[in-house]
Image (cartoon, rainbow, N blue to C red):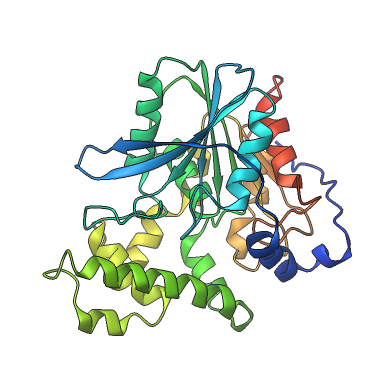
Length: 321
C-alpha cells in the first residue's frame, strides 16, 4: 500500500511541533462527553477501569481506545476521538490502563507498551456482552504500539476485530526514548518522570520487599525507571530487553487486518524508525500517513475537531478496505 497522500494544513502556530503538542495536551478545551465507568476484573486479581460512551443510534460497532504513557480516558485526545465516533454510530470503550484511572492498581505490575494480555482481557469482556458485530482498536502513542503488537504477535484473534488505528506511535521504543532524551524534549521528559516517580513512591507502601527508597532515589531518568521498575515488574531482563521485545515495528509484517498509522514528521517523540515507508509500500494492510505537521497527538484543525479524529473515523468507516 503506497503512502497516503496528506492534506493536513494547520493554521500558522500549529505548524510548530512543540506548540501543537503542548496546546493539544494542556490547552485544548475538553470535549463534552458523557461517560459511564465499568470496572474490569483481570485474571490475576487486579483491575482496569473502562469509561464507556455510547452512540445515540448504535450501529453495533465499538472502538476500544488506548491512551499513551501516563494518560487516561479523560485526556482530551481520548474524549475527542470518542465523541466523533459516538456521533457516527460507534460506541467507545476508553480504557484506563492499570493505575491510570485515579486509583492505584492492586498488583506489583502496572502497564507497559507491550502488555497485550490486558488488551486481550478488554476484548474478551466486550465479546461476552454479545452486543457488537465489529470491534476497532484505536491507540495513541504507547497505546498505538500496544495494539500493533497485539495484532502482530498473535496467529489469530477474534474475527470481530476488523481494523485498527495508531496515532503518534513510537514503533521503536528504544529510538523514541533516545528522541525524548534530546535537550529540546526536557519538558515532556520531566513531566513523565515526575508522574512515574510519584506512582513508584505510592506503590512502595504496598510492596516494600520489591520497591525501596534507595531504588526510588536512583530513578533520575526514564531509562532508569524502566530498569528499576518496568523491566523487573513485567519479566524483562532490563530496560533494553523490554524495549527490544515490545517495539511494534517488528510485528507490523504479521498484521492481517487493515491498520492506519498517522505519525507526523515533526513529532519530537519519534525516531526515524517510526516512519516505515518502505514496509508500508510493500504491505497491502499497512496504511501510513506522514503529515509534515502535527507534533505528538497534536493534529489541530479546530478545538472541537482534530484532523486525526476525522481521519480515524474515515478509515474505520471505509468499506472498500
